[in-house]
Image (tube, rainbow, N blue to C red; front, side, top):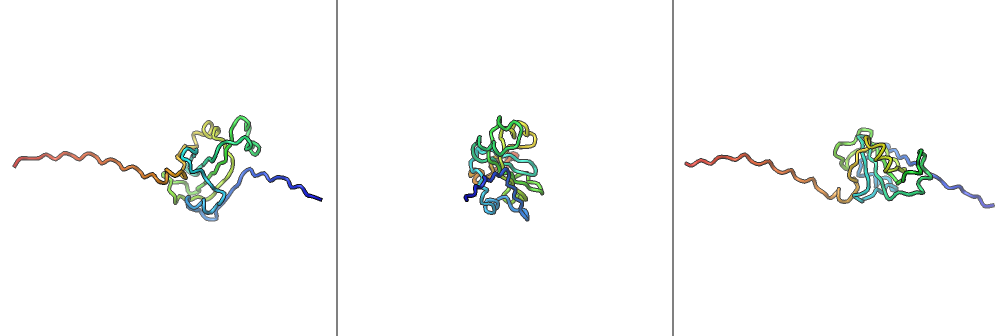
Length: 150
């Protein structure tokens, strides 16, 4: 007799770290975490979390979404990183992350309905962001010193 195994459906993966870990260490600690390195990949933040979209929308993802009107929206793989201490204004590789979720999100939902709580940012895992340096501020013009004849 052959047993038929039903498919496993995962709607959300929730990973809690026993101690907060630096933002830069997450790809090493969680092998499934492969964020997009494309600078055009949407990313958002609040004072407590980062939301990183990866890849293109998939109509097959609607199957796992529990949201009213899910058929009118496009759904994409998403990583959400939480910091209970709060994220610094300028995100650094040492920013502490306590928890991570892997799920599906709708970019349309975020940009339309959640625009007041989701601040768009550059993808922190994009190659160009890591390689760019902060442009130097131009020095103020010096105050002219008069020259006197002797």
